Amino acid sequence: MSKPSCKKTLFLNPPSYEGFDGGAGARYQCKREVKSFWYPTWLAQLAALVEGSKLIDAPPRGLKLPELLPLAKEYELLVLYTSTPTFPNDVRVAEAFKAENTGLIIGICGAHVANDPERAVLASPAIDFICRKEFDFTVREVAEGRPFAEIDGLTYKVNGKAVHTKDRALIEDMDQLSWVTPVYRRDLHIEDYYNGYMLHPYLSLYTGRGCKSRCTYCLWPQTISGHNYRVRSVQNIAAEMKWARDNFPEVKEFFFDDDTLTDNIPQVEALAVELGKLGITWSCNTKANVPRKTLEILKANGLRLLLVGYESGNRQILLNIKKGIRLDKAREFTRDCHDLGILIHGCFILGLPGETKETIEETLKYAIEINPKTIQVSLPATYPGTFLYKQMKENNWLQREGTELLSEHGTQHAVVNYPHLSSTEIFAAVDSFYKRFYFRPSKMAALTLDMLKSPTVMKRQLREGVEFFKFLWGRENAA
Image (cartoon, rainbow, N blue to C red; front, top):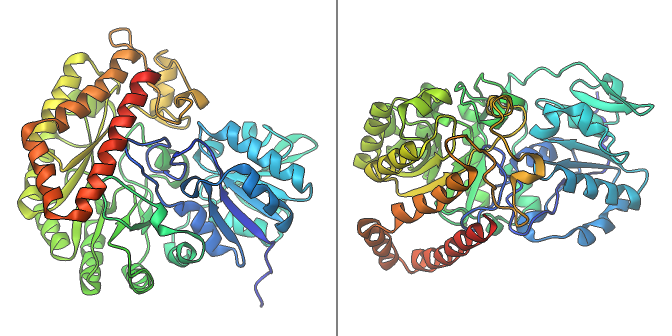
């Protein structure tokens, strides 16, 4: 039987705030400390499944709506990726496209609309459908022209009322998914994608979905992908990585953006061995609990850096957010990484439940003690659909939400306000944390040494330094 022909489909990560990283799905969407853009992997996955489609990632290209609207008449189906703070903006984009082509079918996907599909689909007459849960094959079936009523995981309108089809089952055989890297090659400009801690140019993709952890703030496992970590076969991943290595000779580092690649120890060890055969440099997300034996295997097979969610240096806060990590184990893990020469980008969050001035200081001292190569200090991302959001609402700790999660420039607002710790104090603590961590003589000396070793590193770190100071200045003026 021949495959159904597909509607001419455009997948769009819509234009938004200048420099806004709309494609960042794992933690939060916002403008970063230094120029940073993640690959729009979820949209690329859809584009890989829909024959003849086109993917446009507007923010990294600096594309504005007037530049995109002429495309409206060229397509039959438009699928937008959205987030909680950008949803009103993305609805306006949908409305503008519909005005240009009234016959254009428009759907929206992403964790925000999956959490409240009825409100989302009724937000505008321009929206024809909303995708719920894992939406890969939902979108493909829409593109193939199947009636909405026959497509699992869809919310659409009939006579102005929301209609929900039955939930779509999560994908168990992840090898069913097409590779995203050919879509990157076809539709994206990889030099647009920067990160403050990865080699440039880099390339990121998923090898699986879901996360066994129950962190209260983490968006995607609670709204889309669930807590069962489902993985592609090692053979499938290795084949795509070989293709990517050969077709992206300019790429210096490959990043596996699974929530926690090391959740499945046998899988990640087997994958590392195959990556070692390919001779590529790679990095991934992890928890601070990987055994040294596993770290040795990963390092021996091309691992350069780990992105580690430490979050807090206070034991009770880690319990409050169900992090599932002990501080002594995290310290041991970090010592092992330092000993093996594995670099760490450490992630911390200030303002989580239980936070006080004293625990912020405790976390800063902890960060200085374990001394990651680089750090990221965030405010809590209180997104609908997460346990953290519900907890904040129930306790009346949340003073902003929706579009107010971000400033007019796209940077994070401090949205949490406790009786004993104000949002202003939490906001100010982020700047102080960065300055006290980086402006130590030993850290400054290490960064200077890195620059002296490489003109490329020097050029990049000087640029990032300017961006970092502009970011801090902008935050202080937005407080």
